[in-house]
Length: 283
Image 1 (tube, rainbow, N blue to C red):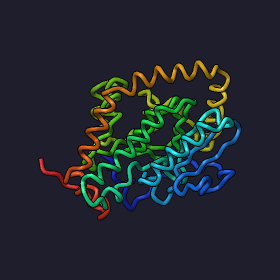
Image 2: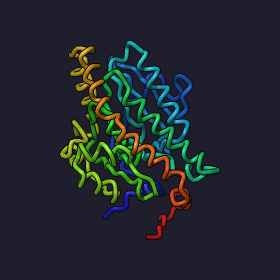
Image 3: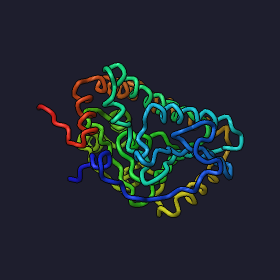
Image 4: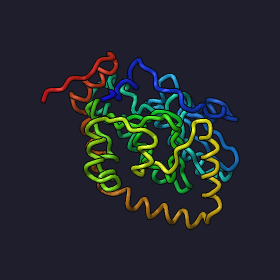
């Protein structure tokens, strides 16, 4: 089996799609880890730590929430898109930041920030497209669950690698059981298996798979399809979706993730990541 941990060490993910440069450029609205662009009625939010494969640290998590807030209030952005700069969509939570936590509570706060982003994205009133430009691992793969449409570039790889690092994927471990079936969801969560973009489409985690060079074009087409419909109707559909997805099940997954993040096992695994070695566990 291919080890998905390679994405979070010295090896490089495949270069899949290079998005258009932002009209505003890096640092728009004071962001240092997020790039925001509004064009053709679409508000693009790019995770912008390409040298870290868009691993989400506290700063990025905070800025992503702020960018969503900004674009929700921007009448020129009728549809929102979440994507990544560089070779990867996102390698998930920044394990080096977890490894540097001074105590279990600080580690727990990092995962609480990830949970806050997840809740905020699920509460977006406007249509939200997740445009997976490259590999999505761990928390990056979890972000697929928040989209009203998910477009994945051919060649991108998806894996919930949290268990490799002493953690768990809160959405896959809960609502994933209902969406994918208990066997498939638990297998993906418990083995860190890599699936392809086509496999993600086949099991219902993606709405579209497209050649990398046509990712932007495909997103624009989906956005137009959303805009042709009643915004009141779309908001009502999203309210129903939230009432089903944002239940005690998802909160149970989040609370278990936060609990695990405070354990010695998870902290030791994060340190193993920093030291570029496999974590070891006692059974």
